[in-house]
Image 1 (tube, rainbow, N blue to C red):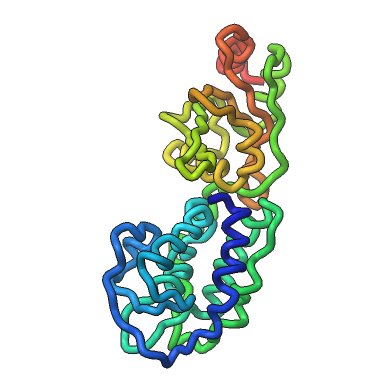
Image 2 (image 1 turned 90 degrees about the vertical axis):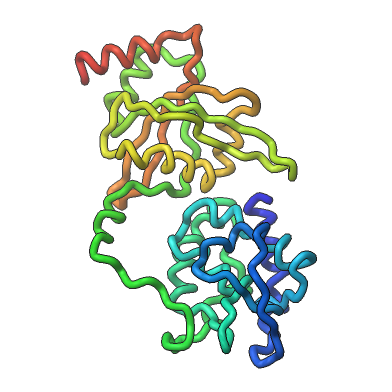
Length: 286
């Protein structure tokens, strides 16, 4: 399901949820293995009905949990999974543990821009004012760790205007991109269709550096993968269906740490401008 359908589903599914009576009788059940979005959350049993009012695992909880997958896959916030699973698979304790308002705000502020990238707003049914403020009785955000400065230093994908695609670039065009942009990498991008009919985009194999700039070798493939997931409208235009295509991608890291791709060069065998430009740049720079 794409994020457009995801948003509409939320509006439909969550609208009645807050009529749920926290004092009603519930039972504890194991989190089903097929409910993959809430695996590895630190507990193995959940309450039914859940905080969305779903009472059937097979008919409601498991299939509807998949509606959250597109947002979670973007990595928009490190506690997005905990926040969402506290609603769809609440931990089995003596009482319901809701997400705190502060956690909702943290997740919303990071993940709402991902929805906005698709032209939609944060669902009204997830209005953070609905959640408790007393943080001793709800799920709180993780405290900032001492190494948070490292996380802030890592480039982050963000919603942006689509980069230009240079199908048949001249040697000068490629050299200008290598000189003007912060980084240049080569990567194979693929697009396939899922059984649901939705497209799935992937960065295949290793990402090679022509100009590394501020990018980190161990993080760049994941960074580009997240960029594709967040910028689905761009990915739909830029990445052709069928076999994986090799591209040279150039861009910059903005002052706020966000990644901005500026140009994509499909690396066609018949056009050696990229090969020659990369060789010239490595030997002579700008």
